[in-house]
Image 1 (tube, rainbow, N blue to C red):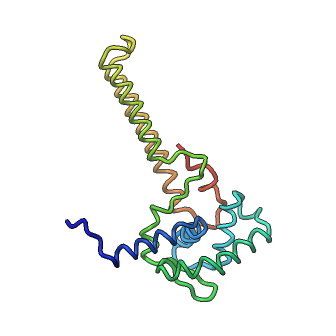
Image 2 (tube, helix red, strand yellow; image 1 turned 90 degrees about the horizontal axis):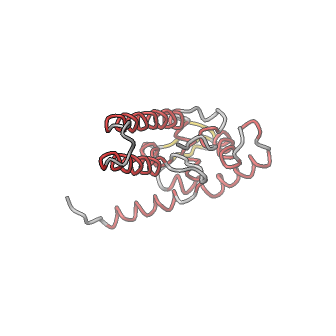
Image 3 (cartoon, rainbow, N blue to C red; image 1 turned 135 degrees about the horizontal axis):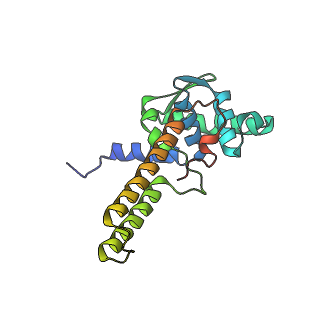
Length: 188
């Protein structure tokens, strides 16, 4: 397998990274992907405003909605369309297959939360330390290696189930629902 990247592939990736560098464009893509087909600019702007203002859609003011709508319409749609991520037909938007393949990268993780990858790394380090202490005999005699392994297995199982449930809610959620999938519930 060659490690040389063609100039065309490099330029395509640079364009894609540039387009995805804006949180608002990522939100637009995420909302379009959740719509599972065609949606309207108004619906997307309303959902994006809810995410940005960390409010349920019903609590978004007309000024907040208009501010986001105008920004999306004037600045972001053309960049998303030029990158081949959405199609625009008047007020109708739909994500392309290329955009749907990016869905895993668009998972919204609020700034104050720990990403799942870091959480699992921490759980692994903690498990390694506990197993090391157990192997060296530094844990109380009542705690056997089997008990330690069982507790770690249960911790990973519970974490994985919570992660799976939250991932399904984020990727399969209805964009017309309240914005609880990005309001801080994505944390371990």
